[in-house]
Length: 72
Length: 213
Image (cartoon, rainbow over the protein chains, first blue to last red):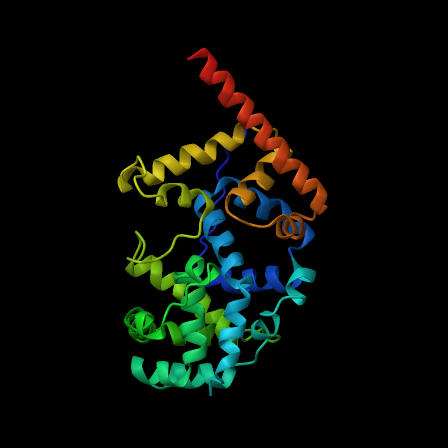
């Protein structure tokens, strides 16, 4: 119970858009790994949304569905 | 996470270059119904994945018609809140991309959901591992207590040894061992061991508390 430090990131902010896609496509950089892990550990809301997002994106049906119609 | 993403079927969708499409969306005040007609595959797919993700996983086909009201509202929110313009402004700053509209729709939908439905959308199927405990019929807690209860539940995981905490929390949220492995840079078998060890510790603690009660 010694760790009580709160680290928060606004999951929905526009600033997080580019960070999240970078994490997804390139992985987390070594220098930001600690902050990233502490945020996941201590910020329940961020963790919940981040995991929900990973699960929603990994859903193969999503990509299959999107490929059925060409959006022009 | 990086190497995992490259093997995934959605990888190409995240690397699309939709700048011209976004420019059109940002500069024309298109109606919601026109947008849904123009990019149905992107909007409905994102909503289906996020809003009804568990239903989809269980093979329940959610019809486009059922999703249309929330999709219309979402598109209207995008227009009236200048979300397309904000996305375009953000993209124009980047020199390398990515400029994927499916990704952007995902992100914008999160913002829409927080702004318009902070307590969740009716009919939405929760996808959180911890929340699912409260989704069960006859759950003992009122909705008002959900937040504090989840906080308390989350806090219990801090009684675990530090190396087990985050892997177990991510496991509770429903990430698969190989995803946790990629995310944290820890071998998948070590993740399995950490999850197992965490369960053992929490289970032993529960039994001990039960005996002393």
